[in-house]
Image 1 (cartoon, rainbow over the protein chains, first blue to last red):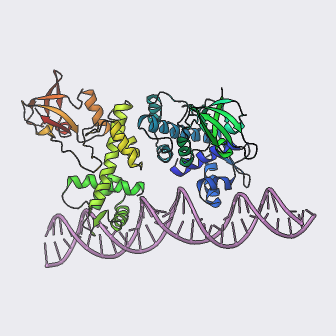
Image 2 (tube, each protein chain N blue to C red):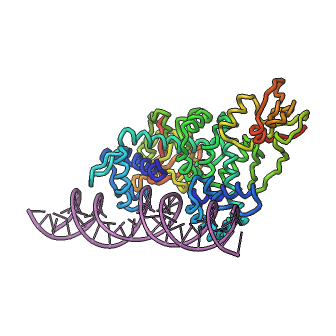
Image 3 (cartoon, helix red, strand yellow):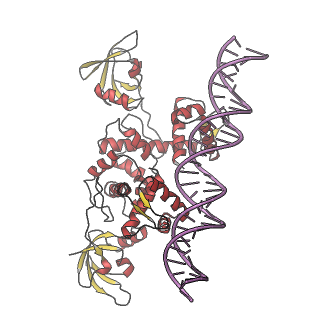
Amino acid sequence: MTYSEENYLKVIYHLSLASTKGVTTNAIANVMESKPSSVTDMVQKLAEKELVIYRKYQGVELTDQGRFMALMIVRKHRLWEVFLVDKLDFSWDEVHDVAEQLEHIKSEKLTNKLDEFLGFPTEDPHGDPIPDKEGKIAKIEKQLLSEIPAGRRAICVGVKDSSSTFLQYLDKQQIALGSTLEVVSKEDFDLSLTLRVDNKEVTVSNKIAGNLFVKLI
Amino acid sequence: MTYSEENYLKVIYHLSLASTKGVTTNAIANVMESKPSSVTDMVQKLAEKELVIYRKYQGVELTDQGRFMALMIVRKHRLWEVFLVDKLDFSWDEVHDVAEQLEHIKSEKLTNKLDEFLGFPTEDPHGDPIPDKEGKIAKIEKQLLSEIPAGRRAICVGVKDSSSTFLQYLDKQQIALGSTLEVVSKEDFDLSLTLRVDNKEVTVSNKIAGNLFVKLI
DNA sequence: AAATATTTTTAGTCTAGCCTAAAAATAAAT
DNA sequence: ATTTATTTTTAGGCTAGACTAAAAATATTT
């Protein structure tokens, strides 16, 4: 498996979570910042290796083998993120690019020893679940903050967007994983929310609330 | 810098330690398990980038910039080896291949945080010195066991060959870094040595003794 | 010093992974 | 149901980094 093939599998995996149908050439090209024609080439190669099922003009789906490989890459990515934050004191908005490189290191032993060293974490610093060595993912119950009605309280458990601009915004508002948020009120006009966090009131837009995962309490 | 360019720089660095003259095309090709013609190509490319000085038929030398880059790769390689052994419980004969991959991860912050996390080690698990962030290497005084006369005692401080077969041989003889070795006798015929290690006598060939670095005590 | 052997470079191929431009298939709109 | 727009694929190129085979330079013998 080349570096590039691994990236394709990973992207197809992430896109296939969002839709039940086949993942389209265009969707892959957008995420990879490449061209649809390049995607067609690679997808045909992956199909020959039986990592994806490809039907012309219909998009691709992962085979069991392909999904497992994608899960192992996601596993490595998220374990390394935990390492960077927990052991090396990186902040949660700095880890992505480095983990993007580390996820390609090939050594099952390394991955599993790292997992052990970190205490078998089940979630990465953004609240995303970490597949175990069999590829199993512990289901996390969560909903978007934007779906919580006024008056309810919830704990912040994850982010949908993990871009550094969004994460830094949350830092500025002192919202972190584990923070308790009370939805004080919801504005009908723009669906913005007023929250109580650490006894301070903060107003966040609907866009923000639509990128924050919470668990009702 | 590509993965491949980094590997060339690293190999040229290691070869240039062994000889004062330019590093030859053939020597590089042998280490890289590639062909001399491929080396010529790459070396010309590195020369254009001013990482090496290249004179046709005369071999190459690293420029200051090239040497620094090579040192940073060696630094990463050795730091990761320490990580694998000290934190993840790898044995010293298992780390090379994984470190060979990890050395290419590009993040100064990661390298320096890792260095700190490990307690700023000065040597890797094979006794090789770790360059600091400026590229400085602490000079380690050491000599080959084969040069020690009978009757003297020395501490094992490093290995010249770090192939897993050699390292596993040392494990079997219970010789580790830090072990105290007493040269009981030296055979004139084949230059083999009889050593006392942990109150046990062991005989090692001249080839073994020529790959073990020690410090007299 | 000339002849031979070795090393190194050049010239021309090949593959992976990308690209552009054009053709073909599918989807949307009238 | 055509026409138009969009998406996807095909065809043909390009570059990095490897290769082989042949030519050129250097080293070694005699």
